[in-house]
Length: 97
Image (cartoon, rainbow, N blue to C red; front, side, top):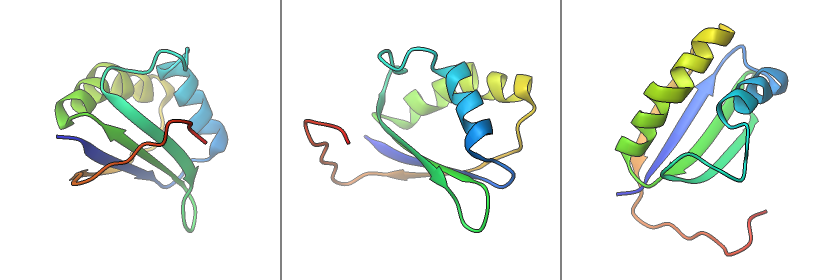
């Protein structure tokens, strides 16, 4: 079942997010297995929010453990809080924004 994954982190900014993003996804034409969509934005009052849709929790966990956590540890990034919710209905337009 598809899931929405929301990662929020204080102490994050656009530059740090982009550095990690470039490390874990050097070629945006080759997304990780199971990733349906990805959005990133500033959070309130500070920090950063990343919202992904994955085909399954297992796909996200695999990416988290194999790619995201090791890259985050290498860069010494601040912790982020994660919320995972099963999606009941998902519509993806044919042309991304």
